[in-house]
Length: 149
Image (cartoon, rainbow, N blue to C red):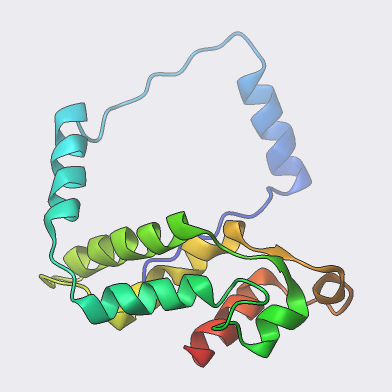
């Protein structure tokens, strides 16, 4: 799985960041990829075929984050104020395509959607007061929703 979790820096790390970015020194950056290569890979990912069942799964997953929706499990209705919109469905599919390619597959499956779900949905869901009071994280909610799907 290719998850990246970026948390807040420690106090000392933040002091270093502020010192390094608010002074007059300059740093050189080395390109890893050209603009043309980035565009090539973006277009390649969009060309990857996706079975209808995978698209349906991604859309069901996004829909199940919306309180009051017919597909919403109790965890959604209990702990979410605002769920993921249609762009989440789009990026679940695009992320799944990319994950599939990076895993050596020609087409994504449900597992590829699951592999990117937390990263795609995490910032698109607004927890309610009950979730905050019970210290239930967005990641916990997403995991429970995905188990439902």
